[in-house]
Image (cartoon, rainbow, N blue to C red; front, side, top):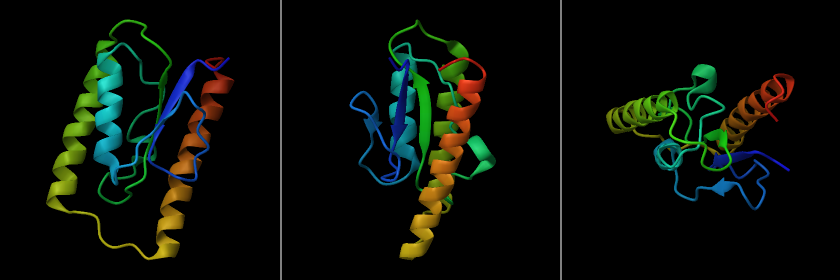
Length: 128
């Protein structure tokens, strides 16, 4: 049994029925969903800005949270809210450009690689 939920808008990420596929384009809708989940008691397991990829440079984002209500974790709330605020500001100041097809594939690969790395770190730490 998995004790995590992946929130992602990346079509190359294989999601289970308990994961959350965000269909809206861009990082902000993903971070809004993550914020909502942490307010409901899920805890962040990977940082929304993993890999220091700027939210206005890559529209694809995958974040891992705990599965189910564990009680509000104020550190998760603070991180989720802060990242969402930064992403909104950055995307407003410098919106996404039109990416060619190959660049979109590359951006999806970057996000998937960061997710895979985060999942591996969680496995090694015994959190999966």
